[in-house]
Amino acid sequence: MCGLLGGVWRDGAAVDEAAARDALHWLAHRGPDAEGIEVHDGVFLGHRRLSIIDLDPRSNQPMRSGALSMVYNGEIYNYREVRASLQERNVSFSTDSDTEVVLKAFALDGISCLERLEGMFAFAIWDSQARKLVLARDKFGEKPLQYFHDASLFAFGSEFRAVEALAGPERLQVDSSALPLYFRFSYLPAPAAPFVGAHQLEPGCWLELDVDRWESRKGRYYDLPARLTRLQLKSPPSFESARLELRKRLTKAVEDRILASDVPVSTFLSGGLDSSVVASLASRTGANVTAYSVAFPNDPEFDESSYARLVADRCPNLDHQIINVTEDALADFTDQTLALLGEPYADASLIPTAFVCSHVREKVVLGGDGADEIFAGYGTYSAMEWSARMPFWLKAVLTCIPAVSNPVAIRNPLLRGAALFHKHLRCSATEEYLAWRSYASSAQLDALGVPERAGDKLPIRERPIRSLRDLLVTDIEFNLPADMLKKVDLASMQHSLEVRLPYLDSGLVEFVLNLPAGYLIANGRRKHLLREAFRDLLPPEILGRRKQGFLLPIRKWMKYGRMRDELLELSAAQSVLDVGAIRHFADRHQVGTEDLSPLLWSCYVYLKWQRRPRLFNVGLGE
Image 1 (cartoon, rainbow, N blue to C red):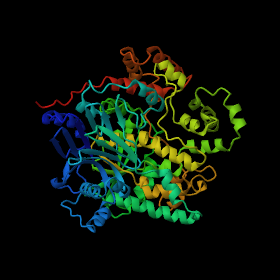
Image 2 (spheres, rainbow, N blue to C red):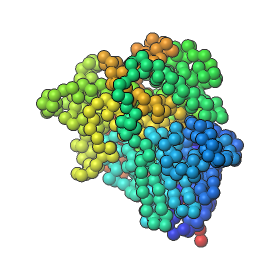
Image 3 (cartoon, rainbow, N blue to C red):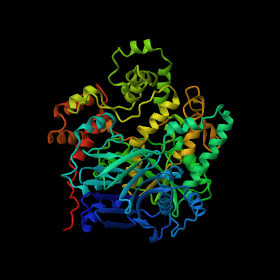
């Protein structure tokens, strides 16, 4: 796991090597073990390495093979199999790294090699002979890749902070048209980006820049809906067969992510179902694995450590480490975490996730992210299934009734669920999905001074949502990479830590999503198949638990205290967002009229990001 940065200058001017290294230093936290650059003919490739596979310096990057030079971030879990197949085609290797496997596969097969790679990655390959640059990103978007393209520069990297340093602040101007997306969802979904002329490469996609023509073209090498259609069986397996097959596939996915490492691997163990399954399987591989859990000694309501202990007590070869967290510690940690953001990102769970990552001693840790999107773990899915069964006329009537302003304040869980259901109910399934994923209304965006523009299309692939599978696929393509996977990458790489996600094995994802919906949600019980597949490994207390998020206490922070006061001070010192609107939202939240903590937190994060230190660009040599 590493950080990459590069640029191509159209006029072919030589890049100042010292200035290029300065820009690369913004990625030092992603790769503290080695640094490498390549500079020639107006092209700069830079790399910071976190050494995990083949620790020898011969595997440092940029890596060259003939006319090709590569910088790469990620891990390929099936690299040994791909390597063996290349050797059968008379390809030779000088390292034991997965980096060289990707480079040699690309040299032989070009873009088509991406379909065979099982893992997480973002890479750039420069072909000095053809004078073309190729960028590519993994199937589900575990690893980020951003780029900027104007009339004279094409810059790319793992984080916008480094891209901004390379391009220069006078080139990268904040794109105000992206703000409605950010404030609506609390993140920027790809390809949207915070700067004019900048983009995020979408998951499962590649981009090729022809330098001589100064033109780029983009394509998709992995299309999940098309794969599901192609692999769909005429008759689905029985539930028992599906249970056994899931057990086999997930066990192998965990083993693959442990074996593809030359350093020790640890695991997160929250006490929830997803991480408990992964930790249990990891402990049975024969490797000595450390499991990290969180305890909230001052907040019993949020403390899941007792459940984590139940799992750890049943797992052989598991060294269980518990990290005590207090609200004050998280508050103190917040500024440190937000200061490293290269783009506005306001999922508040980033803070506690980064805090835990800062305590992990190993370089690699297994996580449980992705399971909710594959096994239908969110309440959103059950709600939209109920909504899909309602006749259109009933929806039309119900949507005319005013919604409860603050559903989360309702103590009765059934009434609270009903109020949330009604609040997000829409006649269109796509609009309803987006309502569940939104944290600000159009009226609130207007009040903030960042209105949605008529005719603007949301970056979501347009297709009907008629079934649970359609809904899961939409979430995997839209929300998972932009929110959950971005959080994992930001939180872990700020602390030189690689997180591997067994649930995002592509074969596993495709297998589960082609199963009947009743295998995933049965009698209102979400993740039914996952629970049954690993019932024998887990304590009954884990199997029967409801999902509990890993959240920051922003509802309380935005009602009173230092962060509320700081938000109001920050808003008064800027002119992008409407100061009166922020004060109005803060007052409504404080008195409990409406839970506006996600929107207020988004304002706080954005205003902190807006005040980031200005960066210096790479100078051109004489």
